[in-house]
Length: 231
Image (cartoon, rainbow, N blue to C red; front, side, top):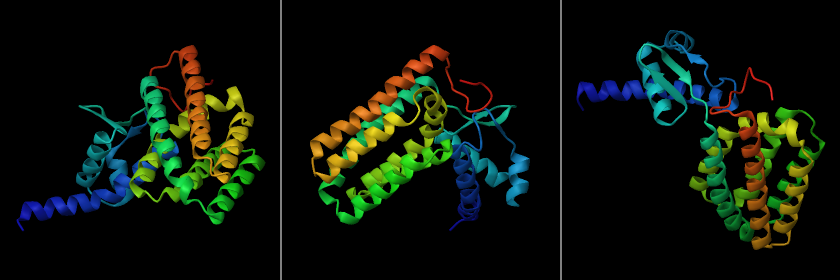
């Protein structure tokens, strides 16, 4: 193995935890759209040189999480309105597929877990807690599909769009409609009625998309910030 190959392997190895840490911060909303990502600060935080930091930022740019601009450095990339709505369309396709695969495999323990999370959701009042439990509820329904690749794609999309839905939708619609729709979907799963459950899930996500689209049109945003502007 040549010296260049060894060096590149070492750089990629050093960049991996930096990539994961920045990605987690972006998906959680801790690093907001438009926020600068300063290479010297990141390098100092991780105790490395700027080389693996640049490698991590390049990967994040390729994956659509970061903007790299000459002489302006790196910033967290926000989603445009069209990207948000496109992701909702992809969610419909992937999540309906996952639920259709999961229902024939659901056992008592799977349904019990979904009921447990649903009960927690109905009792929660904190917005961040509600958002987390909403994600967990959907994950509980899809987990029996036993398709790790599909579940990984769904989770990534949910993480990418979650903060935008939380910010745009919470004040507009509250939590009554999602709670009722979640119960309908869960009961259809219990009845092993795959067609009804998938139809309800499709309506659930598409309704959220329509409400998002209406609010985005009213606000006139291209890329929706998570901090600063109020809704």
